[in-house]
Image 1 (tube, rainbow, N blue to C red):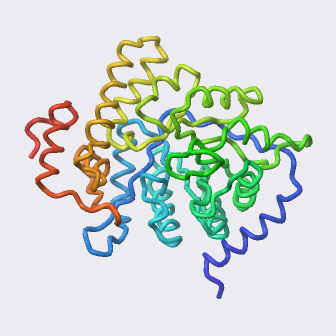
Image 2: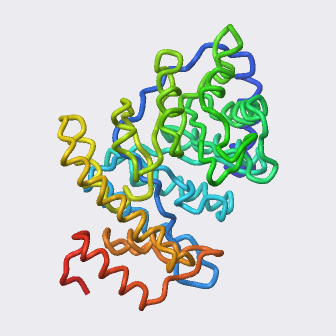
Image 3: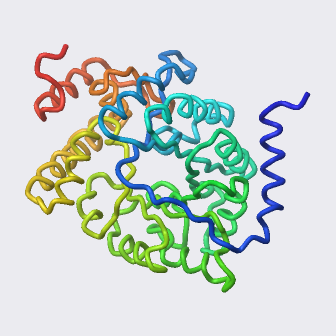
Length: 346
């Protein structure tokens, strides 16, 4: 009997043929609010097996803090450190617990082997995810917009009913002719250049993880604001919101989601003083903790997530190494000093 995974893989191939001649764009609801780039929990063993049992606690914590969207196995979730089977099972676990709490699930599907990416995309559609997010290949990287668009089309065709997002993160992917990557306005223009409808009917938007707010704004305004721009730099979220951005995805929303939702509310009310205070707190988390040069060996965000949420997320996979207990104590003290943990917490 054919396995479920094999059936999904065959469906991915079939979908590529069935949507090849489609030209009408598919309408999708734009994402609003915060999306947590979820940590992938691991057991504390040498092999670092995925601890699927922790996902329920993660989902409950996020819902409690008002974070109602989740990105599974993105950069924060150590995406390409996972096997295809692990990524599929992890997505299934989030679908088991997230939607019941009102959380919408987006699945990162990027792989160097594009047929693996198509398999993940078809699987995401099969389990009922809200959307897929695709990083470009990281070794044989696309060097032109036409190459990137062809890569996106090949993968997104495997999940034609799902909203497809390009994962723009030039600091990690290094795709494009320069270190700044491609201009997202060029990508949008290429998708609309056919003259008979979009090249990729289900290309819904872009996860924009870059500091270039000018490009963010221009892409947000392109084609009458058609494309959903989901902002991915937590440390300057306030700036993106002033351009009319409604959705944001990031790692800090795993543990300061309540505060960052308050930032969004403050900006919407025109209370910029309150918003700046919250943004400054987030900036100190990023600069003083996540980017602390003394802790560069460790996945600091994952440790913070465990401490604040109370859900044990375990260590990272290599090449990051576990944080020693003495350093954890220093991190805990820093979080207490910032008011993010009770001073009495052991």
